[in-house]
Image (cartoon, rainbow, N blue to C red; front, side, top):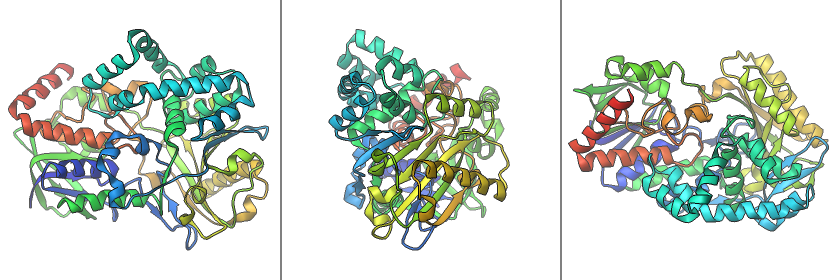
Length: 517
């Protein structure tokens, strides 16, 4: 079998890459080891009949903001976004709540309850975002280095503001929020959003995650896919198939075929060779690609040495519930929110981050909770709620069934404390432990030492690997985790550039790799 490109790993990045190559007229085959495409973007009825659960990714703010997804036009292939009345609520230990709403005046009113000046400060932050949004997202989601997009960003801001923006990008989430706001409400919205990554709210560079997600939430919301996360995957597959692309599940790639330093295809678990005349794209973790699928003799020794220091993001524990009714929150702000943060105040959140950094399970875990029926009524029968909550724990720990059940009970007690009567509404629950998430969700830590040219290891920050025509297309590549499609898009653009410019592109990338390795 011969194709122009073989993509293996049918996560959203792999499917985005395949679509962009098919747009260029390439014959594309996507191989997936599991029995379904989508990777982390998958939903199923796992709690009770009629209750649809998103098994990993659920809310999609980055997809809603991504120029990569916008260019695919997935709404023409069946995707429909749904929104809860409120975007996100953070519930404090004392029972108060603060609300992020797509209506900026509603967010301003909510943060003003904690400090009146913060209403104007939030409005100012959002005005800054509206000015920066398009060139910034273009710079973030395009191949590195984003020379054109960075130039547009500089023209938009001017040199003085650009310098201050650069400083902001170095701040911890706590410092950024404390510099901008007086009250706990706005500070918790920023820091709680930073907790979606694993950089730690006191770590340098974590502020940009909180700012980015808070501003995208304010601007575009935290939408869900109508009918379940799989609807997003289904739209990607339908679009690809309409262009002649193929997706085959249950086919695990065991080897990259390399001839004279160039990737020429793959071999699957049954020994079948599939040839690729133009490109091989890997939507898999970096440790799988470089540690298993590409023989060591094809890789620079420095890259192999750097891989020993590659850090994974924390492990995840998630519980999914079928509920007989909406969660009975004492904080009214949480009732209408699609996503709820339960993690206490900044001190408690810092403690949770510090525990994870030391390899310890937090005593007071930070919870992200999703109310998917609140956002999309098709998720469960009328009057009920399909909900989930997850938290992070250190990598490498052993979780027996009893320990996992005990920890999930602890999660439920935290929810019960803020929503008395919650446990009485549980019809059924389904638990996912660290082993159910294949080791890593985001392709590696989001810490600043593993971003840009340091992702997944020190290098070019591009999808191009040291093997010609082999491209890293998953979240291990820049710009990292989240459902935005940028890593897949960048890999497809690199493959197309290699085909267009031929030996000149090959020589340029090879020379750049020699400089860094």
